[in-house]
Length: 314
Image (cartoon, rainbow, N blue to C red):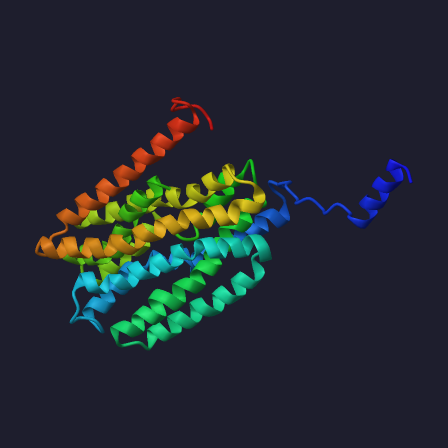
């Protein structure tokens, strides 16, 4: 038997496996339909986390009024931690199984957790329902939504992810996240602190998500615009340097780093408010320093990639 015949038999018995598809449509009806679906996914998942300040203020005034703000803030902090720490596992699940089963399971858990929170009256009940069950489901909706978009776009990826992120409102990511999530948690209580009524303070979160009293409203609008950029660009940066088959896992790893900052930032903020006798100046300085540290980290990473050139396109 000659070498050519033997090689042909080997190829027949071991057919080459199909290679993964790496083409990016970068547009078309199906691609933009995915963006619309992802927009809705972030609306009900990460958009929900942007409302934690309303929950914080309500619990402090009602069911959990006997507890300190720092203690109550563990509910939204643990909620954000659960969303981010599960990201590597959900991302890996997305790489293996795709988005369908994750989205179905996440929807059920997210809705069930919020239903249980609505009938909770004890601190541990809020922890189980709103800080564990619901964010776990929200995470299963959030990460597949982001990852789906990255598999349909390349040249227009940042635009597509920006549209997706508007549905809601690593080194450097840790510090930036710690600073970014503190205002989300304490925005409503700060509005009440400076003299806004309970109803008006609650609208600060709405102002934050869309865009003296005037300064608090202006801050909510400006912070909403700027933090949305961070939400949209972070997964785009990961996708830019990753193979298609690794986007879910690598994005999940990034969010896992962020989970530590999300867990510790709000309780630290609550403790700073208590230590300042109800004043917010220590909290404001801390959040600003964390965001500044994150910005320095991003600049350092860019300079490393571009070999010291700040304004060149990566």
